[in-house]
Length: 82
Image (cartoon, rainbow, N blue to C red; front, side):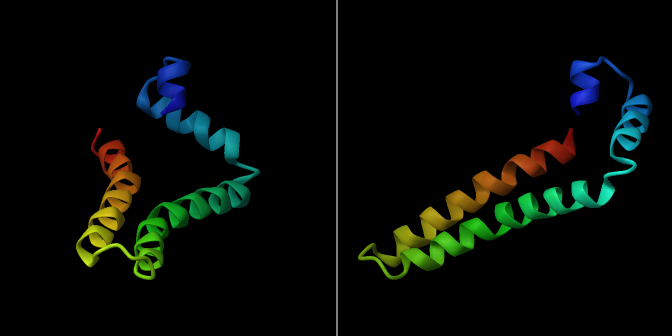
């Protein structure tokens, strides 16, 4: 995405350049990407579970957890649709 926007490359050229940049660092790139993906997926349910032990009504706990989950994963859905 950055190659397309910042370097004004076509799609195939951007994929080639991206592959060239991470060719010797693919394991590090995979770890960082996986960690960020895991945080974005797990944060909403974890916060929702933690809110169970507060004095909030269950309805609001569910709403807060759902909104956090939707905000974190919604951007990824929009990113993949483009």
